[in-house]
Length: 260
View 1 (cartoon, rainbow, N blue to C red):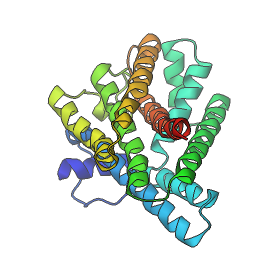
View 2: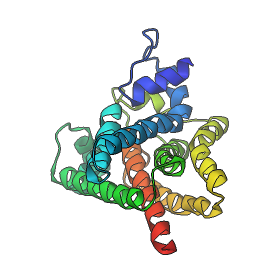
View 3: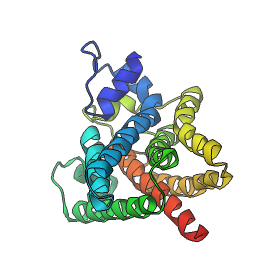
View 4: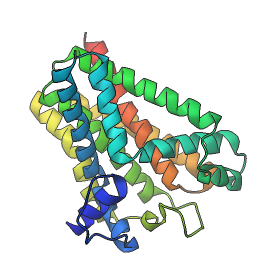
């Protein structure tokens, strides 16, 4: 429970017991709960969407409120990482330049454009997904699976690459020690549970094929990060989470379109 609350403290704005500290060892070991945090964040997004659909017409407003809720509960943690990656790789020509730009708190042109386009794709993908099917358990699990699977993908980056920064004051330094195969298996259990539950409820095994585009995007991101940084940073993990979350939404939308 201490490790779970440590993860909750690090990855969200939600309150935790006062006894939970910022121990580097606990932060590193709590990484296994990152996909489980996706269940919580996704659940808050689903609940917000449902409430918005009750209070307002089920059009754009509930989806927008749902996105606002997930951004608020995470403190835009991952969106910030995505924007920093856009700025860093867009404006840097060497590892040192890229790392320096990503550490700058100011938002540049590449980050602004990238974030706007990412949120736009996410919004319209959610709109397309939620407008076809009546709200229920399957819709909720689709939403949650995007959050849990995307966080699992980020965890596999930690397993597959070394940490790129050498400075000791990075916010992601505590999780840079890597994770063991056993820890990754636990994280995978949390990350895959929502998708497996969706398959069990619907009987549609085709949902498991969504792991293919996720694996491809992970492979491309790992090659990209390794080429330019010889590893990953916390911003790279945030960018991975955001991109793969959108990939899951687009997979659901594509399946709905093909099956019509």
